[in-house]
Length: 180
Image (tube, rainbow, N blue to C red):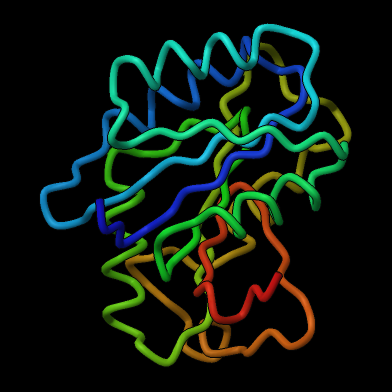
């Protein structure tokens, strides 16, 4: 499969959260985009491999399992980058449920801004309980700290990364800026 976007999830012992993250990636509105999901098991001792293998069994064209024995999110993301088939690499986390248009909006964002090296998007928390008290008053600044795909701030989107490739639950970058 020739992928437009490679999605990388590096995970360590969070299989209960991972299952929901993978479900959100299985249900993408992907009419105009081909994508793959690379689950990088960062030396987990829980059911991470089994949960990922179950999803692969249901959709083997879209999902791949990669084992990275060195613990640490940077090792996991680098293993994902090295295995990616697409020019665009999107990073998300095992505790994130992406919107159903996430992958297609990443592709559309790069098409709209061809000179952009990376794009970021809004990440909103889904609290299972009451948000921590220390976050009160800071939530709106925290949740909207990056531009959305539908309203890119050109200066931010065109900022060029040199000598590093950073990532988070809502970052997509061109493979060319992530040399491994």
